[in-house]
Amino acid sequence: MANNFKPISGREFPRFSAIKTFFRLPIADIQHDFDVALFGVPYDGGVSYRPGARFAPTLVREVSSLGRGFHMTRAVSVFDQIRCADVGDCPIVPIDQVQTYEKIESFVSQIAQGGKRFISVGGDHSTTLPVLRALKKKYQQPLNFIHFDAHLDTYPAAWGCEYHHGAFARHAVEEGLVNPKTMLQIGIRGPLASGDDLDFVQKHGIIVKTVDDVREGSLTDFIKTLPKFTGPTYLSFDIDCLDPAYAPGTGTPVPGGLTTYETQRILRALQIDQLVGADIVEVCPPFDSSQITGLAAVDTMFELMCLMAGGRKA
Image (tube, rainbow, N blue to C red; front, side, top):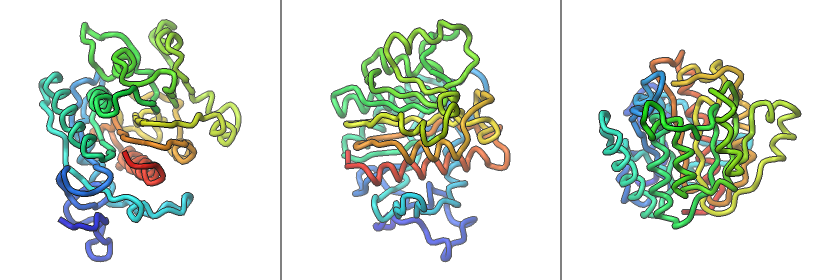
């Protein structure tokens, strides 16, 4: 294993060659000395419509061969600021959600207890819940929570099942894993099953920013409304916050979404002094076209690494 935690050179090994890792970074064990762990969560047992997100880590690794390390807008060379490594995929049990949750929580706990931050690639959005459980144990307090999504994900049980990809945010609030007063949802849009779907976020005072909120004025004006986040913060990016034109490969697509440029600008504007973890979920390769969705996930991953490069360690 390389000890400098730099991507493989595209001049030594062209980007279509070599073993596929996230951003062509070295493979490392969790216990090795680096700053940010990148890993996959290949589980989609919590989806309610299109399955296939279990294949996202493989796709995103492949497409991230096109990734670069220098951010033009920030003028930051991310791999000079933080040491990142691919630690593989989290173990899961594809036919058992209970065991999968236990394995995810244990895997993330190992990373967090070692003082590392991380970015994971799912997987469906139900996998965020055990991640937050692990982080609550680490930090002994509810986390600030930033949630990009087309959906509120605060919905009730479905078919008698409490744990699914549309309910993880409700459980995170009810279990005290996140602080609803410092919880921000971006990209939300209809239609809803009924007006009752809004009851939970209104009851708990969650800040909900719809696509209409983003588009009513200028993007610059919207960015000025974003709060600052102080203390342990987690960011979850559901790729379906993007319009299906920009992310066709997702499990529950909703027209009228954000553009990739809008999410770039919003991510760059976020002020977070301690981003301890993040995920990108609901990328569904079987429905992707020309790797459009995979490219959007890679771009988001790059922006998240840059956010971590600007914040203090876990």
